[in-house]
Image 1 (tube, rainbow, N blue to C red):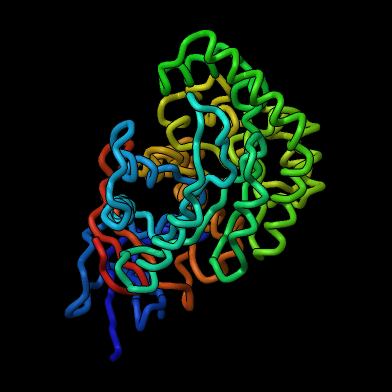
Image 2: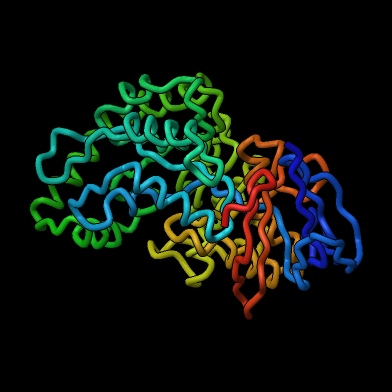
Amino acid sequence: MTTETILANAMLVLPTETLRGQVRLLDGQISDIAEGTTVPPGAVDCEGDLVLPGLIELHTDNLERHIEPRPKVNWPHAAAIIAHDAELASVGITTVFDALRVGSVVSNAKMNYGEYARALADEILGLRDQEALKISHFLHLRAEVCSETLIEELDKFGPEDRIGIVSLMDHTPGARQFRDMSKLKEYYVGKHGISDADWDAHVARQLDLKDRFGAAHEAAAVAAARRYGAVLASHDDTEPDHVQRSAEHGAHFAEFPTTIEAARACQDHGILVMMGAPNLIRGGSHSGNVAAQDLAEAGLLDIVSSDYVPSSLLSAALRLGDLWGDTARGIGTVTAAPADAAGLTDRGRLTPGARADLIRVTRIGTAGAVRGVWVRGRRVA
């Protein structure tokens, strides 16, 4: 059955400009774009609102919050996934790479974390196959180098699992994101409520894991990404040497580099830089690392991720558009740039032939309110 929707009298955010006009959605794709304020019969009158591509999220921990809404509360997974999906749709995210940790520590009685990725991935993929989800879901495997079971967990996945991204996670105490040990201790003590003695034992154990398994786990994760056909990402690069190694591994983008020196090195190596929207909106990193706005002002910011606050993605893109004096460029950090980084060629731009994933947004000061969301031409929020 032919399905058609026309969004008219809108400020269309095109790849390099904005213009007042209309966009026609036909059978799941963008059919054509025309300039003007005319509202054809049956069309949606957007009343001058922004219409832009659906937002693309490459790295979000939001599902974890739905799975475990309070410490030690394990919520039914199907309900959690559906709620997570609906939340993302409501804030304009139409494509998500759900981040799942692979690599566990099972020998530490007080601070262990077990395997879950394979089972949860099966549930996500099962709901997707049942068409129970509003938006497009891919998998992002976060490979924990400082773990005991990374290789075994990676071996449970294959090319059939729609894994779009594998990221290299090195959470060695005193390095990368938490090179400031006081910040790391504050985070863990706050999260786990452990004693000083337990903290010291945890640090020693993690350093030992890095010494014993770090190199082998890093190599295994890089090989797994190639086997899956996934894009490789680095995480928390801090020094130019980290970026050099990421480049040698073939990383396409860098998640949350922690210093401006690392971000510059990424640019030199042709690696796209992704920063967190909460960092931009809060005015700085909660870990004491480089501010996203500093990178934006230096021309070193390419992609934005909502990280742990889904609603922050749209607000950050609008804020960047204001900062740069270029709305299309700001919106591109959450649409075209993440699509390119993840190898998605069918979405992320308002162009004829692209997937009809779009959102309608009303500006409210520096923020934006989502007034409509379409995925493959079907309204989902």
